[in-house]
Length: 119
Image (tube, rainbow, N blue to C red; front, side, top):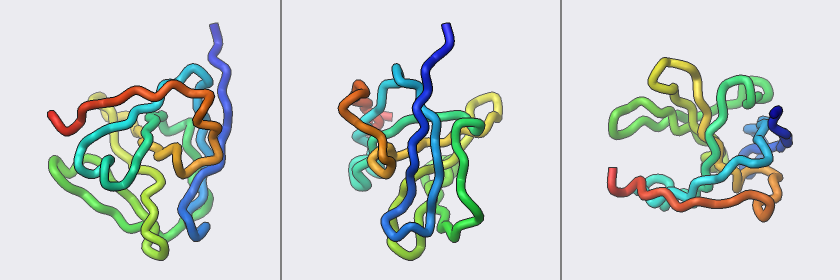
């Protein structure tokens, strides 16, 4: 059975960073309690490279920590972190999108708590 997708617009507060993202309607979002997600107020959805389209070549600042495998990007003007980029274990590009930075109707998705602080 083919999944139904919704396309949402997202980006930073000042508008320098803009993207669109396709999210399956049955996707469950993650609310992680790790130090970075908790402090930034992230509500996560993970999508593959084909589901994420960054507009143009916006200025982005990159923050790496811990294993230095995930690029936590943020707008250098307003400081909003609307997405991060990493890779799956097999090397495929993967995006972590903060759905709070999109126009998605959060009430239509299930939200699961994730204990990232214990990792």
